[in-house]
Image 1 (cartoon, rainbow, N blue to C red):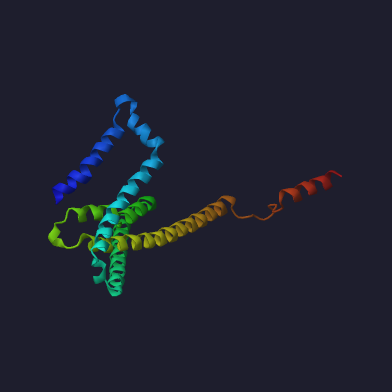
Image 2 (cartoon, rainbow, N blue to C red; image 1 turned 135 degrees about the vertical axis):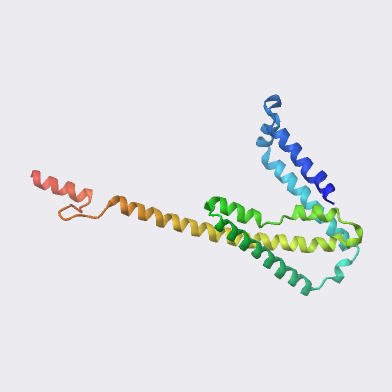
Length: 203
C-alpha cells in the first residue's frame, strides 16, 4: 500500500515540482502554470471529484445504500467532528508551547489538522477488495470532509476577527503613547480654532 501511494502521489508531485522549478527553456512550464492557474485548478478539482462520484455511484447501483441508517450518518458526523476538534486542539497547544508567530501558528494549526478528501480516496482506492464496499467506505470520508470545512470556516473567521481586534487595540495604544499627555499650559485647541485665534490677534 505504501509503495502504491508513493508511485501515485509522491512521484507525480516530485516530477511536477522539478518541471516547474527547472531552468530549462527559461522555465516555460512555470510560466504556463502561472498563466493558466485557474483552469488547471478547476481541471484538477473536477478529476478529483470524479473518483468519489464513481465509487458512490457504483454503490448506489448495487443498492448497498439500503444498509445505511440515519443513526449511522449521525454518529459519523459526531465522531469525525470530535476528531477534527481534537486535532485542532493538539496542534494549537503544540504551536503555543513552541511560541510560534501567529501567522505560522495559523498555518500549522489549520493545515496540520486537515484530512483532505482526495488523499482519503487515494488510500481507499488501493485497499484490498476484502476490506468492504469502497463506495460505503467513501461516505464517512465525504461527510468528514464537509464537516471539516464547516468547522475550519468557523475557526478561521473567529481567529481572524480576534487578530484584527488585537491589532486595532495595539494601534490605539501606540497612537496614545506617541501623542503623549497634555501638559499644563499646552494648547489643546484644534487647527481651525488656532487659526481663528491668530486672526483675532492680528485684528
